[in-house]
Length: 353
Image (cartoon, rainbow, N blue to C red; front, side, top):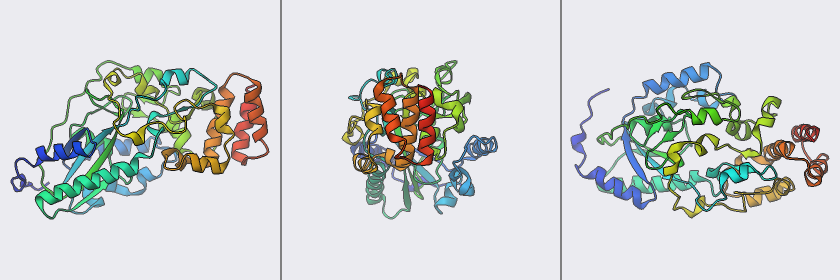
């Protein structure tokens, strides 16, 4: 890489950027270079092992994911940010997981979709920097393009990669969203932090489907988040009983992580629970019509899986619930009013009762 003249940037610019980022709701900011050779090899090995499953988008864009300058020509730096999302007022997660009549939804998805909020704030931050330095090239991202978010966050010092493959921070745990600004501004780099997982294997030990096949290596095909969110076909039978009442995502590896005792509650009202999704009754959710699904989950990240997969996931959870007249009735009543995919999962669920 050619030497970059960071002297072109005012000495106090990064200090100002920290202040601006905080005013826009970000808890931390960093700056990374664009050398992702190590991450590129790790990604290639992960894909080669087939761990990406049906997530073809992980390989669809060639080298653009690991070479920022190919995605956005002129990029020499990546500004990284993180925003806490932990909804402190939500029902205690373990109490929901232990009640098989309720459905568990990953805590990040209880409120509004984070993508739009994060991108709007990143755009504001970018324009504020531009006001200070003059013309600069930039493009903002939040889980919205082929970007190695975790690798960039790690390089810029937002945290380290935990054994569950999430980014961990000593003061904030892992309950935060990541965002990036690709730019041609020659900013000074921020330093990576050291790793602090030590000999702990809590996340590996607790995974319901043993998806963390080795430290830092997750086989997505076994992961409940993948099965309930990414997969559009039938959920493999061997994983259904392991899913319990998890109907959208899975937080077990984060809930058990010792570092999350330092997690900070979100200050964003958009991330707080809506429609009782922090502790919903499975039978109630299963009775929703498609229009109710679309209306109640408007603006929610859950909506992207679609009504069919929503019913599919709940049918599995009802199959794992203890037998009650209400559970059996809910399953039977839905049999003649669903797709073939959902019907197969309902039939499986009824067989469990």
